[in-house]
Image (cartoon, rainbow, N blue to C red; front, side, top):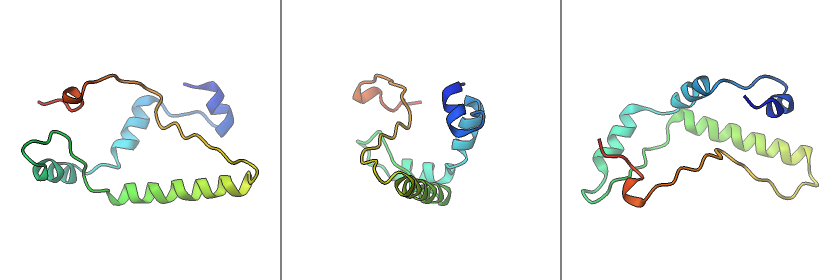
Length: 98
């Protein structure tokens, strides 16, 4: 847990397993399977269609960004760090083949 971040947001942060469960809720297995089936034979990677839940999350993020701009109009630069984890991979290893 990040005590500093918890202090900034005013509450404890969820555990990694709770956060993972929440984020997995934005995916729909059927759309993932459809994207896999629609890729060309020479393709490994695929991008599923955006789910309704992801569209909603995008709206929330846009509203949040707009509110931050309203509250801090003098701030001109922002960095959004979605995940600071670095995982090295080679192109062929980027998507594991099962």
